[in-house]
Image 1 (tube, rainbow, N blue to C red):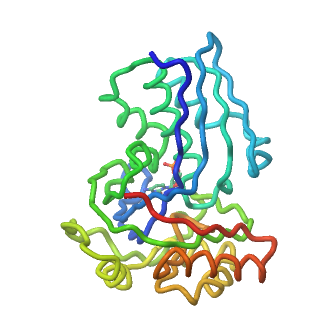
Image 2 (tube, rainbow, N blue to C red):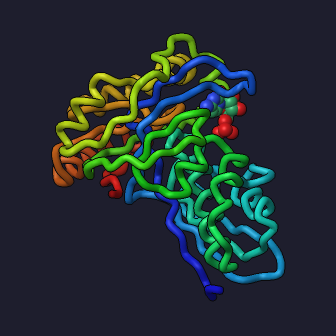
Length: 275
Ligand code: C5P
């Protein structure tokens, strides 16, 4: 049993996201290539007889009105207690898995704090949300089913800029407005041996949720325009956060500085993907 546990909850990026039909359970079939970044939230866990959560950090306010955080649901699902502190660095309801990444971090952190077997975590993760299973490993993966079928796929490191225009986009509403779908019939790629190979693959893919998200929040079009200097610019998840892929870290840092200067109210962050 560990004394104190600190876990990182990296931002999740859907490099592409194709949707299929709506299933009998109301969820849509998906196919997505997911990577994680060195930008994320942080969770600290200490032993305590009670279950508590304190939220601090730049986006803590965004969660203030939320009656039941997914982190607390994760702890209850495991029947474990802890005194937890979340540093909320990622914008809320923004398509980069903030809540799901935090819930996955809580599962990992509680398992470590209490010396639990991690074998059953994926099943609990799937109960908490479609994106939570992929966030448990937080490594590049091919995602299918409604999100719970996760296959690790090696992906080269990418230099990125993440941009969120400060509007929350509810995932369910975006799926409800979904009309055009690319389907989920693609075969699992063996892997990508270079950044360029990965970009060439991604240029043929899209995010099916971009059109419905833009219909709800047209500012997403402005965000993609601001990222037009990138080798590839796409929306992640159900938005509104978009990412641009750059040749190297220096170019990503310079682009982030320029976009932040032009749009001071936006959240703009250079990042690199984890391997
Ligand atoms: O699983 P999660 O709680 O993240 O999903 C939020 C909502 O997004 C669901 O209630 C559903 O309306 C929609 N969704 C979907 N298909 C998916 C994932 C989510 O329709 N694969």
